[in-house]
Image (tube, rainbow, N blue to C red; front, top):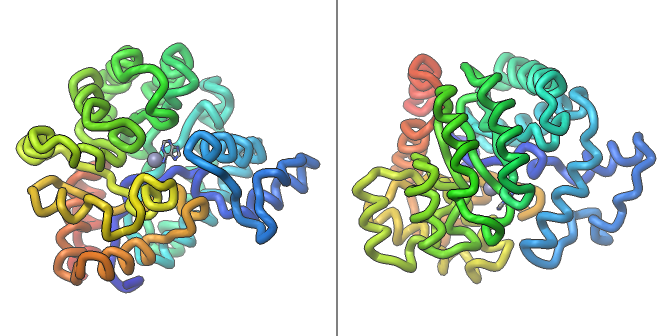
Length: 325
Ligand code: ADE
Ligand code: ZN
């Protein structure tokens, strides 16, 4: 499976940090975050809310642009080893410089340096989607959106929202999304992961996003499934994440296959791979095992993912050649 060229649209940079990497940083900085690891050194969390807390504690070890440069390189190495040729990663000025534009530019520069190096050395292309954090509230999201708008361009290509879907409502974030849209950014929102179909509807109506992060719980409302198929809304599906967090019992219970059969544009991503003990190769293997998906199906999905990518046409054309190889 690693030989199949892959496109990943939903990956949180901080959430992709290997636990050993975070432990190393914490040691360098004399920071005690030992409570977030289990006895085998993996991240330890009880449920989704606890996962978000552990995620933020791990992220607290990332304190300088240099840390993000090293992180981005480590993450890209792992993705390239899985056969990923193009990746979009969520990055957040909330974690990089506390929404201060000058600091955010420095972090961004560091991540772009890592991306350039990885492209030269490993042939993987990375782009960034600035994300606000829902449970940090709409006011902070406005600051995040301003940073996104100021740095929108070839590399920062989108804006999104992650975090606790049970807190607040998409309409509270309308200003932030309008600001990002006016700056030319493409839009996506986490919805239909912990919230049901109504959460997906609200994201579509109130934020006018073209992609939905997860979105899988749309399956509970057949009319919504039809609407997603008709509109061509792309779902950034992360099956291993949903199974690890207990939304579905196993891959066989996951709705990705049903959504695909009903004509919804699904894509495959890992979300926060070390937290969920996954990689793109593992996602492919599990989908093959659960639904008998074959090479033709995976190639169709990679093409669909590239069509839904937020990068410019020249970049897409370059990646398309790699998918055809
Ligand atoms: N941030 C990182 N991973 C997330 C997830 N699966 N859902 C919501 N916010 C997140
Ligand atoms: Zn996510």
